[in-house]
Image (cartoon, rainbow, N blue to C red; front, side):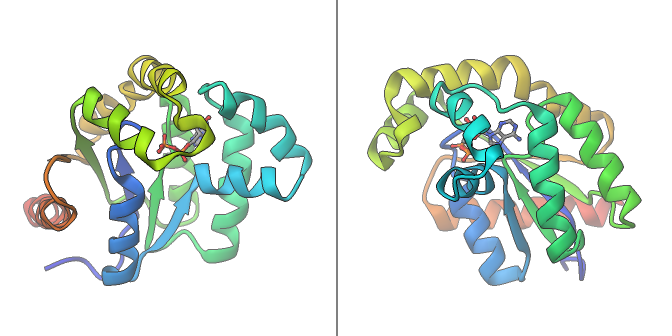
Length: 192
Ligand code: ADP
C-alpha cells in the first residue's frame, strides 16, 4: 500500500528517465511535479532576470547557482503546496539537499522517500543525443555527467544516511522501471 501523501525526490543522472517516470507518477499517483530544469527553462523563455542569469550556466552544462534554484522552486511550491510532490532535478548538491530538508520540514511536509535511478553513462549520452535539447549535445552531456559525479552524486549518501534512500535500476522499458519504483517506495515505507 502506498501512503496517502508523500514528498518524493526522484534522483539520478541526467537522461536516466526522471522526467518520463515523473509523468507516470503524476498521472497514476496524483503527485505534483516540480522540475527545476523545467522551471529554469520556463524562466528563460519568459525572459525574466533569473532566466537570463541561468541561461549561461545551463548552456555550458554547469549548475545554476543554488540560491536561484531554491528561490524558483520555493516560489512554485508556495503556489501548489509542499504536500504530495515529486521533486525532479532538485536537490542537486548536498547544500541544496539541506535546504530541501529544511524547507519541507518547515512547511510541515518532510521528505518521505528518495528514489535513486541508476544506469550506465554511455546509454545516457545516446538517449540524450536522440532527445535533442540544446544542452543535450554530446560534449555538454559529458560535462553534465562530470558535474553530476562531482556535485550531485554525494546527495545520495546524504539521503542514505537519513534512511530515506531506495535505489532502482533504470535500464529496461518505461513500465518495467515504473514498476520497480512503485515497489521500492512500498518496500521502504512498509519497513518503517
Ligand atoms: P537533466 O535531468 O536532463 O539533467 P534538467 O532539466 O533537470 O536536466 O536540468 C537542466 C539544467 O538545468 C542542468 O544541467 C542545470 O544547468 C540546471 N539545473 C536544473 N536543476 C538544477 C539544480 N537543482 N541546481 C542547479 N542547476 C540546476
